[in-house]
Length: 431
Image 1: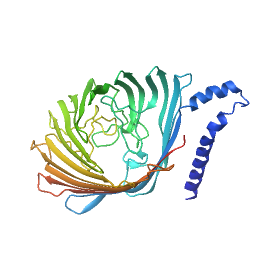
Image 2: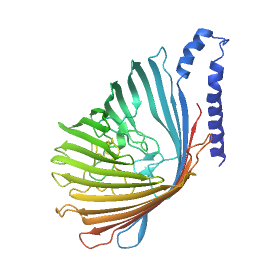
Image 3: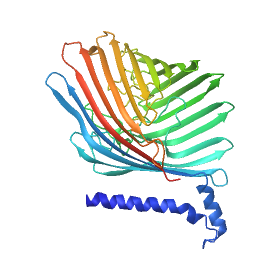
Image 4: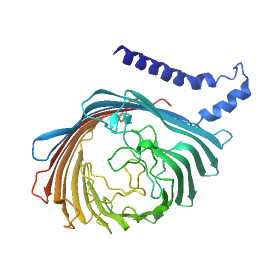
């Protein structure tokens, strides 16, 4: 407790110094001269310093016939700090960020909230997630260093409460009403892993000390034609041993009328290693609002040439990269088996004073292809929470999430999965 108090006190002192820094830098009577202050203020103008504090309590358990056994049982915390500078002479700046994490208790293993050692959790740890130079030329912005994806094209971010880290470069260039995005990377670490040594696994499921890819890149464009929004992209990865993967993204979204929209999203990967050809996930999403009530209805289908489960990202390895498929149901399963057709319906209600509730039901059927181990699965989930509507801590949220999932196994065995999760999220912008 004393150790934690000292760290908290130190963090508060650092934050106070950062808050005071702009005022001190604005003093043109600085001993180093007004020119120095003027140059430094170029970085401060347009800059931002933000933080987020999270506690996550989770109990996820599974029953395969002998009673429920916990797979995750913890209360972990995560404190993130991110700085983005302005541009010196209108063209040069930098971004930096990181987090400190730890456990109040952890009775299982890696929670993906704290920094982990393989599948085991580490001690309280500090990780740098962003350290990148940025260059601006006209409206085009380029970043080089340890960074995150802009999400245009086929490469997205691996998220916990903070994003993962790519080593490489990104370019974002507006072209009229369209935006072109490019990313190149030769290295990635998930937010819960210190480095890429844990992003590739041997036959026993243990990290083998290798990166999951040699290089990964994506080119994409998004924009609109009238009221119709489009997001297109292609990606390419060299994964070693003479093998490569190519990914494809196509999404279109259009309003049906004032309060409703319909979207179609396709994400495919051509891979001889993972799918003996093509693996893809396609989704149709309908959304309609009725004042404070919102209805989301989403259908998803996954398929692959070798009947393997489909992961909608360029490189399949867990935590090694991410894609940009838009649907996420927070219902335990990935709903990704080859030949699986799934349907999710969710109702969300906002009371207007910060309180909100939501409930969803997912149903699916799975092709009998001698690979899949179950014929169908279904789940129900629910959320209840509150978000602050004003003040310096606006957006701070407490939320309780519940999920129950059941599978109809091919061999007649039982499979039930439960998830109980309580989160406290507190964002704060210093400037």
